Length: 460
Image 1 (cartoon, rainbow, N blue to C red):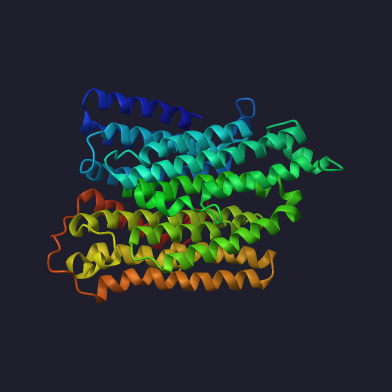
Image 2 (cartoon, helix red, strand yellow):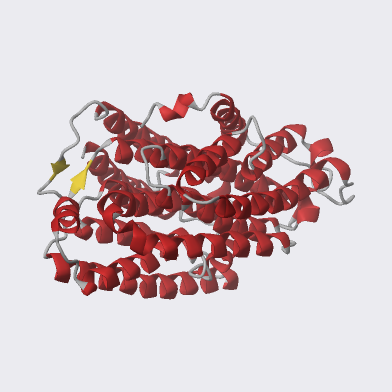
């Protein structure tokens, strides 16, 4: 619980730093707060996992491992933030504060043990993002993205709350342990309960960006500031999946014959929609938005492949996807600054202009494509292996076909960097030291996890 309290205090402190014009202290104080948060999470590693605060939260290995990942990725995003935010806004403290509170919501979702805390966590995480997406008030694309995100988010929250209401009406409890006992011991499950499960499935699929609940994703990712897109596609998506996993792969396992066919259909649609639409994009940022939909489909394998390794597979895949996304969006910030464009052509000749950026982005693209010796390959291998042990080979074949499609559009970027000539009027590239640290560090971690996955599997 110390991590939650630390983030609450940190968000308020950051706001006061902005009030007193101490902009230079924002990043050091934020990073220090994240380190303290990380310390609290690590210190609770060997503690007995019991529900706390009247059963509202539980800091078990699942919550701690994914919370550590969220904090680390947020730290990497923050290291990129000072150089980025000072070029687009004067309200630095507001950016920092909202990201911190969104991270707080993510940690609540990771550790919920009561539906009330799940709802609070999702709303804290989402409301901060509604503001961050539309914080550039003079940018019409940002305003449109914020409005779409808010309206669709409110709509999906209605599904979520209605589902929770039906589950409560059938079982008489919001507590996950009592809910599990109801499912396991009831001789006849109420029809209300089945309806609640389907509504919860719809609400959570929206949060993770799975088809056909994905329509908000491309426009919101495209209209938001690049660094906010990076945060949304990593920390927020990871936390939403943990909330999904905690409920469906533990509490609702006895009913898996009911919800698994629905989820399998969603997975197949998500994979094809995400990959085919990503294949047709000319904008790198929009391609990343659509590809994030396909990655949601892969991560949903961890939900349907019921077993002890499902959480481990999701952890490796989430780490791989998050690190690669931070690299991709970090390089995009620098490329857009020098070329003024987010299209694939803006990466032409990057290997000649800035070899380090081209190398780290190549590692990120290979990882997202699932090429061996990268973390992305290991994550896909673990998830595919779990699915192969649970379902027929047809699903695995469809997943492999979609993975092959992903290789094509990810390597499109690599081809442009190494084999296409840049425009003559491209500005000289300047890579700040903080960017070098984040990009190189994330690339090294991607290779370490890909070669030695036990380095992260030990967390579960």
